[in-house]
Length: 93
View (cartoon, rainbow, N blue to C red):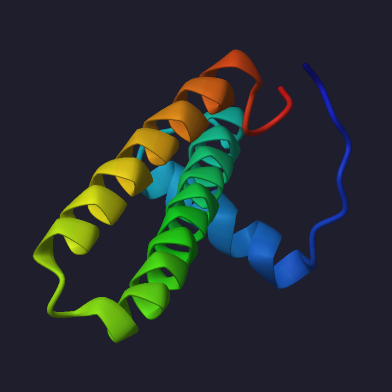
């Protein structure tokens, strides 16, 4: 898909140099950059969700069964989220 975007001159020039150094087309470089950005955002969301769970566990540190069950439920939910992400694109192309 073709899109038109406005990019500041300095960033454009830096990216042109980077594309030349990496022997990539402009489209390939921008695609890689956007994919990496989307993946980092996704990873940050997972980290935030895990941190929220860990925050709730502070009152139950000694309850191994509770912590184990919470971890299992968290990973199960993350698997569901990753599966649902596969059904819909992270970045519209």
